Amino acid sequence: MTSPQEPAIHTPPVRRFKDPDYVEVASTLAALRERIDTLDGQIVELLAQRALCVRDATRFKRDAFQVAAPARQAEVFARVRALAAQHEATFPGLSDIVESTYRTLVAGYIAGEDTFFHDTELITP
Image 1 (tube, helix red, strand yellow):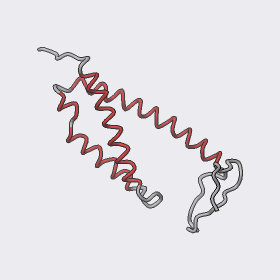
Image 2: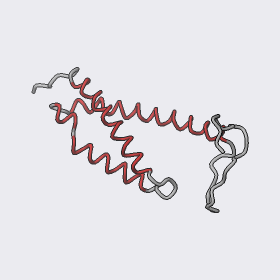
Image 3: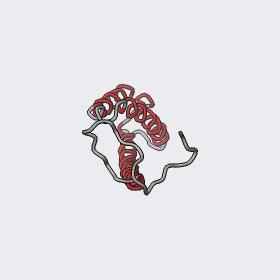
């Protein structure tokens, strides 16, 4: 039977994995959510650092094609997919999730970089 309410966060689990080798990450949903919130903060900080690198990369681009850099995009998607594949045993489908996330992320960064590109000028020798 399902319930239309959120799960209790300070009580023990109500389900267990059938795999006897499964290792629990936390004893309550509250502890898991706290850990997730901490990870989210770290992820956002890393994304902000990545954004600064993307912004600075604008200085090395001559035109809109170079801003989009489709070959580089393909490299990034393949690299992060391979990194995620290393975790497929514990979370099947992670490669698809990571690639999809990065496709959205990169599209946003490119849009931002395009804006920054228009705020730069060509250096003449």
